[in-house]
Image: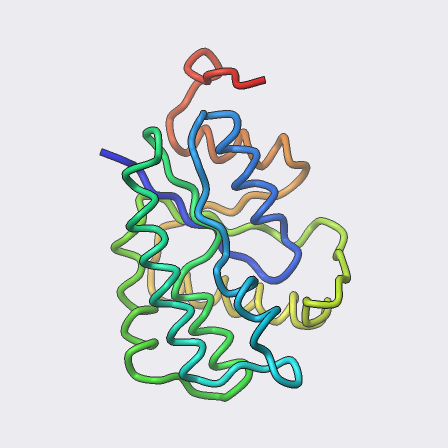
Length: 181
């Protein structure tokens, strides 16, 4: 049985770096963020339509489902339908009903939810929406997880500290870690 771990956090909170570092350390794979790739080639005036956001959530779920057969005990997911739903709310103040359903039920897909803290420097690249949005996304994530009693861990500090927090939450000791270097 593959354990699926999802990473949440505003833009530039270290989700991708942490996913990749954990996958390398544990000899498994990640599911990258389809929405980032899609946004780069399809955005108009830095926006996507509600229908495009639904498409992103569906494809992200498909990528996760397909990756399970290639994973080795753990599958690290860089995002979820919840994040895509949040982008819909952020940009359109509403989401299509199917996207809302995918977001509300996505928690059943994961064995561990990891919220990456915003205590690292913001990497202001052209495809990101700004440090102010990072703060707003963090507040939204924290409030939603608390309001809906979604069990999660908050990771902060250096990449090494964040990795250790996830490994501890998964019950992995340093002697169990395979070395891939």
